[in-house]
Image (cartoon, rainbow over all chains, first blue to last red; front, side):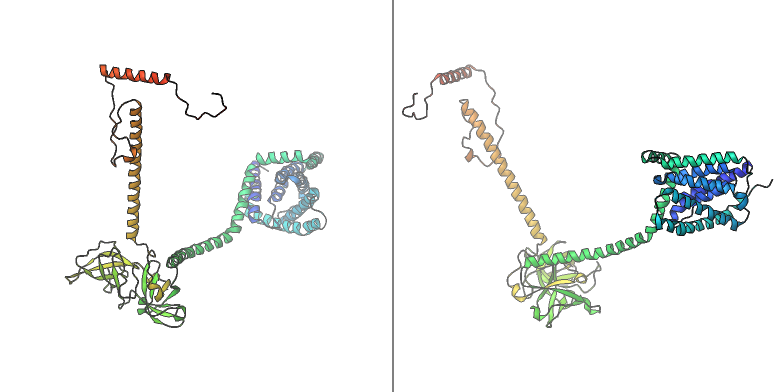
Amino acid sequence: MNVGGAIRALISFLIFIVLHYTLRPLLGWRAPMDFLILALLLAAVRVRPSTAAVIGFALGLISDSLAPDALGAGALAMTAVGFGASYLKAVFFADNLVLNAFFFFLGKWVFDILYFIGEQRVHGFELLQQLLLWSPLSAAVTAAVGVLLLFIMRPLLEPTPA
Amino acid sequence: MARAIRSNPRLDLIVVSTCIVLSLVVRALPTNLRDPLATGMRRTFLAPLVMLQERSERGRQSLLQADAKQARIDSLSLNSMKAESLDSENDRLRKIIGLGSRLRWGFIPTEALHGRGVRDETTVILSAGSRAGVSRLSPVIAPEGLVGVVDQVDPTMSHAMLWTHPDFRVSAMSPDGTAFGIAQAHLTGSATGGYLIELRGVPFRATLKPGAEIVSSGWGGVWPRGIPIGTVLEEMKTSEGWARTYLLRPAVNPSDVYSVMILRRDRLAKGFDGVWQSAAQVEQATQRINVSGDSAARAAALAEAAARRAVLDSVARANGGAPLGVTDSANAPAVAPRPAPIRRPVDTVAARLRRDSIANAEAARRDTVRPDTTTPRPGVPR
């Protein structure tokens, strides 16, 4: 990835983070989209797994700082998701929107599973309901929004031809 | 999407392990360490993001509450529109209640129902009839003054002729009784564009100034004396050479009449003193208060002057001199006291002799043993 591509990827990354703290609270859905996961996944496929893990750790700390009771849970989940996404990108990733959507869906769902288990605030039936109902819904919304944003921001995310 | 080249898996595993361990350490931190860490991040590099989130949530709240706010604003607008009419209605009702408390008895409160026809602006239907004690030619009044007279009576309602009716007449006068006339509706149109009253047949020698109040005179047996009819606007030019005609602004606007009172015939003979406070009465009362205040101030000034003169007399008497003229303060003349003349000591031989003799007399008085004025009790040594 050349410098231009890195800058554009960085801009996209920042746009996703800003959207997470503006559009998401503005909509206030019960099953919200997660722009931080999208930003992490889009960065993870461009960097080495170790770098993706560090980015995930940082993003997780950022999200955890607004919920101090769960501090560390988000960092742990995002570290795992970032590392896994970067490690498995050769297996999963392709220039296909449907595959990208599945990638986003899976990333968000795995993140929620790790987060809610690591957070240890929700238990029993409520945890099951969260992981099997609301998390898939949120993951689906995240995937849809991610695909939409990929489509919109394609000029910004396309690799520069050599 | 771009694909990075995977390399050095051992390094990747070391880094990711470190991140996971750090996450677990942060997760395991006690609350007293976790909270300052989160707070520090929120207050430093995350502050812009926190601010963005706050504003977004505020915007969402505004969006959610927009409909409710609009509904509330609409309700408030409606209520404020109603409030104006309620205020005026309350004002009217308070006046009616006040009039009722001044009349005390002999009246029938009723509602005036206006028609919407052409001639209906000169008549009204009243919601009280003969069962309530209404009789024909009963006066109809409002807190502001004269409204009309009942001309037809049914058991449950009655029909009243307003003062705007062409056949309506009432004997009128100025409150001081210097001018009399007949009041009737001004039917030839008016410069002010509203309902007006003419006061006809006022003797030529009696002049009324604009703003003068006109009340019913009590002559004729229908209307009691003292009910306000209107105030003088101007004198009208007429061809009659022996009498004046004045244009009056009515005390009661017939279009605003909704709650009125019908006076019973037996109440008319008892008089209406103090029911309507006319402007002239208010002015007279004000003048009386002013005069009383002046009298009190003058009396206080005289009392003060008398007291001052008495003190000066006492001082002069103690010094052996003659009093300054008035010794009895109770008989002080009712004039403003002149300032007492300043008595400058004149250093003459006679004056010196006089001062010496006064000083000797004072010394002799001090040396003299004063007799005891108390009665000696037996058995008590003196």
